[in-house]
Every structure is written in C-alpha cells, then in structure tokens.
Amino acid sequence: MDADIIIVGAGPAGLCLAKRLSGRQLKVIVLEQQNQDLLEEPQFDGREIALTQHSAKLMQDMGLWDLIDRADIAPLVNAKVIDGPSSFSMMIGHELGGRSELGWLVSNHLIRQAAWIGVQQAIAANADITLLAGEKVTAVHTDADAGSVTLASGRTLSTKLVVAADSRFSTTRRMMGIAAHMHDFGKNMLVCAMTFEKPHDFAAWEWFGYGQTLALLPMNPHPVTGAHRASAVITLPSREIETLMQMEPATFNAAVTDRFANRLGAMQLVSTRHNYPLVAVFPQRLVAQRFATVGDAAVGMHPVTAHGFNFGLLSVEALTQEIATALHTKADIGSTSLLQRYEGKQKRATLPLFWMTRLIIEIYTRDTGPAKLARQLILRVSDRLIPFKRSIARSLSGG
Ligand SMILES: Cc1cc2nc3c(=O)[nH]c(=O)nc-3n(C[C@H](O)[C@H](O)[C@H](O)COP(=O)(O)OP(=O)(O)OC[C@H]3O[C@@H](n4cnc5c(N)ncnc54)[C@H](O)[C@@H]3O)c2cc1C
Image (tube, rainbow, N blue to C red):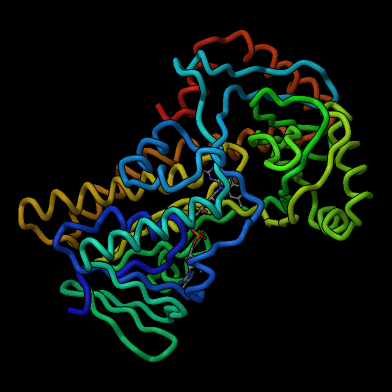
C-alpha cells in the first residue's frame, strides 16, 4: 500500500483532516490539484468565516487557532435579522448562548494558511503526511480489500481508505457513483471588505431585503485607518452581481451605501471583490466502499446560516474519532461498519440545518404581498420566542 489514507483536496477540510490524523502511526497522502505556492500563501478570497465556539475549540485543539494573528480574529457578539425596509430587527444576543460572544470571524485564506502551517508542523514532527501539490485526481477505484486513485500524471496510488475533501462539486464523489441533491438558487453572492462611518458593534446582519439579500459580517477595525470594517455580502441574480463587480470603486461604494440604505453611513471598498454562485449540495450517501466524504464534499451549505466550514470541522472530527477507535481495537480503518457509523453521525449533524436553511431562503426571498406580511409576522413572533432564539444562539455558537 502507498498509504493508509489518501485525502483528495488540500482545502481547509482536507488539511485539517491530515493534521488530525498525524501522530497515529498512519501513512497519509494528501493530493491537491493546485500548485504548492497557492497553498503556501493563500490569497484573500472575500470569505469571512463565522466560526462557532465549538469550531474555535476544535481549531485550538489542533493548534491552528494560535497560528492566526489575534488582530485577525473578530468576535461575533450579536446577530440581527432584518426584513425588507423595516427598521425592526430580530436580535440574537450573545447572552442567549451564555458567552460574551456567539462565535468568531476569521478570513478563509487565514484559516487555509493556518491549516497549511499546521500540516507542515505535523510533517516536521511525525513525518507521516506526504502532500503532493499540482496533482489532479482523475480516477478512483475501491473494492473490498483496497482503494486506489489515479493522477493526471498517470501515477496510481493504493490505500486502505480514500477520503474526498474536494469541494461541494466533488469529482471523486461522482466517480464513485454517488448521486447528490443539488439546488441552484439562481443567484450569486458578491463578498468584499468595506469600511464605513457608523460602528457595527460586532453584530452580524442578515438582511432579507426586497429583491436583494444583504449580510454584514463584522471585522476588526481597518489596521491602517482604524475605520469600522466588515465583510459586505450581497446576493442578487448573477447579471446584477456582474454589474457590481465591474463598477469603478467610487460608483460601487455609492451603490452599496445605497443598498444598505445608508444605515452604516458612507461605505468604502477596501479589498478585492469576489463572486460565488449559490448552489447547495447534499450527497445521497456520504460514504461508499473504502470511501468517505468530508467538508463541502459531504455537505455544500448555502452560506446564509454560516455553517459550511463548521460542518466541515465536525466531519473531520467524526471521521477521526472513528479511525482512532479502529486503530485502538486494531480494526480495519476502511471497514463498512466504521464508515456507516461516520455517515449516520454526520447526516444527523447536518441534514436538519441543510433543509432548514433551504426553507428560510424559500420564505425570505419571496417578495409577493402576502409573503411580505408573513415574513414580518414570523420575525416579530420569533423575536418574542426566547427558547427559539436561544436555539439559534446555540446553533451559531455550536453548542
Ligand atoms: C461566500 C461564502 C461565505 C461562507 N461563509 C461561511 C461561514 O461564515 N461559515 C462557515 O462555516 N462556512 C462558510 N462558507 C463555507 C466554507 O468556505 C466552506 O465550507 C469551506 O471552504 C470548504 O472547505 P473544503 O476544504 O471542504 O473545500 P474547498 O475549500 O472547496 O477545497 C477543495 C480542494 O480540493 C481540491 N480539488 C478539487 N478537485 C480535485 C481533484 N480532482 N484532485 C485534487 N484536488 C482537487 C481543490 O483545488 C481545493 O483546494 C462560506 C462559503 C462561501 C462561498
């Protein structure tokens, strides 16, 4: 065997899994199609990742949290949901979660960088991970005894277990014949960092406007100007997003200030702009013979409930625990029973929120007269339901 475990994809989920498996007398190979320099120095990609308290703890346990500069970690103190032009908002306060913050916000590229450094440290300490960059997986095969992956270079590697961490559009999952429920929302999301005049008080906004959905994810003040700063998230049909992407910065600033109804004062672009199509994916199976999916390959969430990478970390943790138990009992790390236990746990953790998210979007992007009334009513009633709000707070903090 070339490896005990082959991980396809060195995104944050694949790297975190390699890091968690290190030091267990396993030989792990990570295969990544991107070149090494892109992995070593990931570029800002616009995503500000809301991490639950539980995810922050998992990252601390992996030694990744301390690899991120404290100034780049912003607290998520409160979250508010706004509907249409109304000034009313449903507020989810940090006190509902019993902590001084609901969670934390960290840029995706900094998470990727920390995970990369964490893997390098594991390689230096244990010499049990081989990371092959610039290697695209083009074929996967598994049977009762072993698995193998073939690379674009023609090389074939054998293993006891293949793990797909190759994004929500996982080609290895597809090559294993696993179908997936995919929902294209027909919209795109523009994300960028902006500064503005009024304080955000470290509250995240989810603003279901009419004809647009906006979000604001608080960041620490701009390191040079000290101005209030946040990640602005704008969801619109792709053509409208493309127009915003192409605007001169000054025109863009005015357009976004207007879209946010001047509630933050004048807004100013302070980063590159990034455009993501919105497609949610849930595979019919998360495992197959000697094959498992983790990260977005196991569930591709709509970002509105900010759970994609949080679920990714849960999948890493759940699979690692199963593998650790198998090693302890000298059982097969690619056995069907192990993989089924992992699948059951992961589905229970993710499927309810996957469908809940779909429902929220279904309700809150309908702009007909009755729908607008229902939207307001639901929000005002929910605001009074403290147990309901507490359950949202717990979901945001991962409790
Ligand atoms: C706008 C936006 C906002 C988000 N906000 C949040 C948030 O607030 N909270 C949260 O928890 N999550 C959030 N997410 C989700 C989060 O970004 C993802 O869950 C996470 O990045 C997925 O990591 P991954 O490692 O599973 O996949 P990816 O980051 O997609 O990595 C997959 C890797 O596999 C490699 N690969 C693919 N195919 C092959 C192949 N055939 N051979 C070799 N390598 C291959 C790719 O090159 C890539 O490096 C957000 C996402 C978006 C788009």
